[in-house]
Image (cartoon, rainbow, N blue to C red):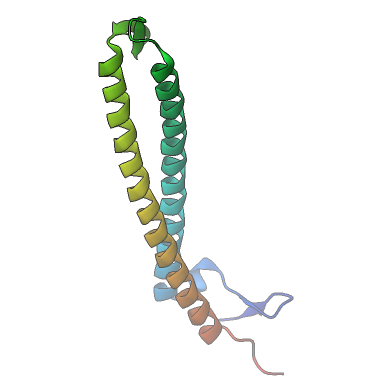
Length: 134
């Protein structure tokens, strides 16, 4: 194997020259990064949904007991009872809060795994590809 080095003395290897174990770790690291990105996107979507639910609940609570309220059913609005709608939105909010908690834990675990694997990769690369002493 011929080693080429960049300006900072780091070895540059072609994909074929990377040892199989190192290559597997790199692939796993990339998968963890993709999973982390997907988790963060889901978390952001749930946070937006929670913000919308809070706005809807605030407005619904302002409505008088005899006011007519509607809820969305696909592309139409249907008449609903205020108390039933409040209960439905509160349950949805509780479910979203639970989802947010689960996603936060997944994010934390995935970040930890990625960091651990990155450290292992750094150690492997440093140990295997040091430039020859001058």
